[in-house]
Image (cartoon, rainbow, N blue to C red; front, side, top):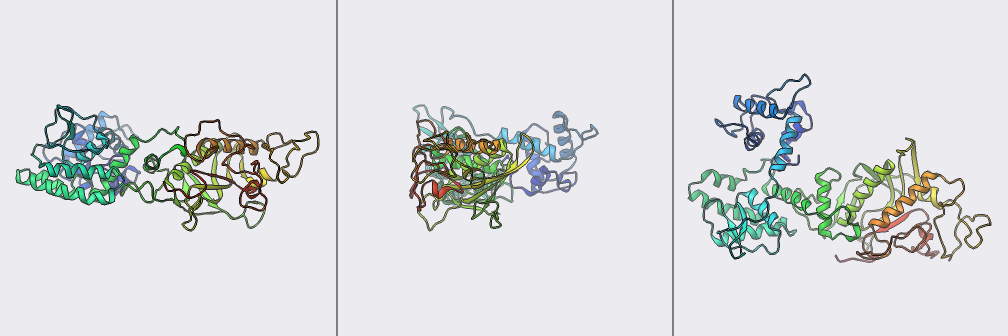
Length: 493
C-alpha cells in the first residue's frame, strides 16, 4: 500500500495481494470498511445515509458499483460487481495516494498565531499539520511572517508553536522524541475543539481516528514523513560518495517503501537518525548476498552463506541497492558473494563503520545467451596471465612482478579470454568508480574516473600499488575487489 490511509491495515493489505478471503463483500463490518467508505466519499461516490460507518450495506455496495463502473473495473466475464477485490483496492490506493499529496506552497494572508519553522520546508510541515487536523496549513501574512491557518477554532499561540515545533522536530531526525510531544499538543487541541462543541473533531484528535487502528499515530506520521522525504530526495544520478547521510536516508526510505529492501530501523515506525547504523536482510533488490571466507570456487571450503548485512552506513545501504539493481538488470545476477560487507564495532576503519565491500564473485544467468555463470575475482581474473609490459613480444607472465607499478587490466588483451568475464569485471569496475570512492577520499570528484590498472581507492588484482605481506596493495586483493564510501580510517559524519 502506498496510501497512508490504508498502509499497515492487514485486511486491506491482503485484499490488495489477491487473498480471496480478504475481499470486502456486503455484510462485512469493521474499521477497514470505514477506511474504504471514506475513500469512496472523498473520490466523489455518494454515501449520504450512513457515511463511513464501517458497515458494508446496500449503500456501500452501490457506491462500489458506481466507482468500478466509472473506472471500467470489470471481472473476467466483463461484469461489474459491488465487491472490493485486489484491482479495486489497487485503484483506491493509487487515487488516494495522488489525492493526499503534500499541500503546495504557503497561501497568502494567514492570520493565525505566529510560528517559526526553523528553516524546515513549509510543504513538509503543512503535511504533518494537515494529517493531524491540527491546522489547515502554515501560511504567510501580509508582511511575509509565518502564521498558522487554524481549523476554525482560535488556537493559543503557545499551542500553535508547540504543534509546529513538534512537526519540525519530526522532520529533523528526532521523531522518536517528538511523537509524544506532538501527541500531547494534539490532546490539548482536542480539549479546545471539545469546548467549542466540535466533539467529533475532538474525538478524532484525541484517539487518532485519522489512522488505521493497527497503526500508532506516531508510526503513521513517520510513514507520511518518509514518503514526503522521498519527494525531496536527491537525483539517482548523484553518486553514493556525494550523498549526505540525510539525503541517503531519503533514498533508502524510498527503496524501503518500494519493497527493494527491508530497512532496520524502519522509516515506517519512526524517522531514524541518518548518522546511525542500519541493517538489511541478505536479499537486496532481488539479489541475495552470501558471505564466504575463501575466494577459490574450486575448493570444498568455498561455501557462500546468505547472511543479513548489518551495522551499515546509510550511504552504503543505498549503494548496495544500486549495485544489486545494476548487476541484476544488466548481467542477470541473482547472487553476490563477498568476504565482508557488514560493519564491525570492534574496528574503527571503513569496514568497521559499515562503509565497504569485499566483492568475491557473482552467480547469475547471462541475459545475452540465457546461460548460467559463476564468476569470481580469483578464478576468472587473478588466475589469468599478465603481459610483460617491458617487452610485449615475450610470453605472458603468471602475475605482475612484486613492486611493479606499471599495470593494466590483464583480461583486456588476454588471448582466448572468456568475453563474459572480461566484460563483466570491466563493467563492474566502471560502475564502482562512478559511485564509490575512486581518485578522491571524499565527495566532489571532478576528474575522470580511473580505469583498471590506474591508481584508485578501488583495490583489485590489477591495482598499481604493490605491498607484499601487508593487508594493502594488490597482493592482498588477489581474491576480491574492495571499495568503500568515505575515507579509509574512522569517520565521524
